[in-house]
Image (cartoon, rainbow, N blue to C red; front, side, top):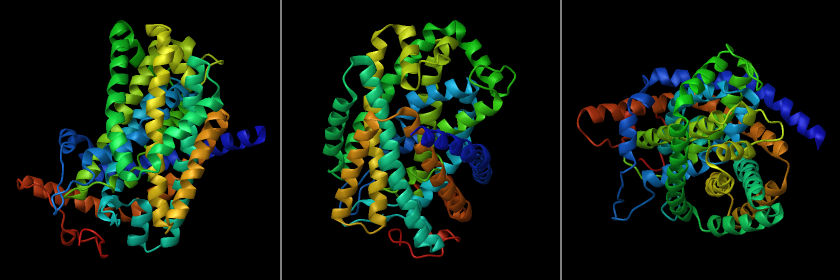
Length: 468
């Protein structure tokens, strides 16, 4: 196990340092230029789209833009926002937060493109719901079903198994640290709660996510705002520390500029998932009149996750002082618990345990759906799907009782491989999403509520399952 832990650590450094940082940056900047910073300029419009409810021809409601947003937010907002950000600061210093912000801003454009593509190439299930994602647009546009199957296998393993093990690992640590309850007991309870939802299908996942995500995000943000106000005199110094460390002007125990960039990008990608190819699976579920609408909604999700929730954790940790995030006896969620306790008292440990339970539980069911959608792409029937659900529950339990570093590093490797495949694909076919963006803008300028017609997009040269 020690040798495997060393291997995963080295493999991660190579994958992120020499491949992913450059690829993420290039792809994000390219799409940002192509849509002329549309992911930033249209921020107000994105918020307005969350209120939209589309009725089907029979008058029934499908999965709304807000519910699809909550499925993706459920997966995004979790361990990475509380434990991951603390770990990034410990390993890369305060400067990691600056690079996390940068990857989020350019990642908003990447998320727009991949989510718009997912909407364009979505397919309809027998129960009237939609599914889609990278595997679907890989097959329909590139004609390479084998690559779509490879991606489906990787995302099913990454999210259903590895990321859910990560979430369960953090839940186990947080609850055990605050209550003393054994990890194996926590694991059993978590398996039961997860099973009750994932055996209920995408509509139940959407309903649960839309209830949990907004409440937990608001409560956590309010606590962070309180901490910032309480320490308002130290806020300028905190920002100075972030920027000076980001460019290596002031090195810290966590590391110099290289460590700051590496950890900021890695944890930023894990948290907001821009370009990874996961969020498009949620984006495809929405009933909407134009694919670009869900592209904008999912761009907003990147900012909610990283600029707001991740920053909230970063401020809590940094305002607690260097002695907290440089303590070798603390890791992950324990750093955040110690930091918040320093601000508000011992009750913070229990409060964060509840927060992480809700954050991570919603992530587990959101992550599971990504696997389910891709199991269906591979042609898996009811038996295969139920088998997958059982394996997910097993991994949730094993993650709850497993080793912290091995679980996280292995998950990072799978995440990196998945992101590389998706980023290369969307560079090849991204022109479809870019044309769709300008089609949407044109209809808006004409005072219309945009409605999608594939004939207006010259780059679409395949028969579409739904939009035809």
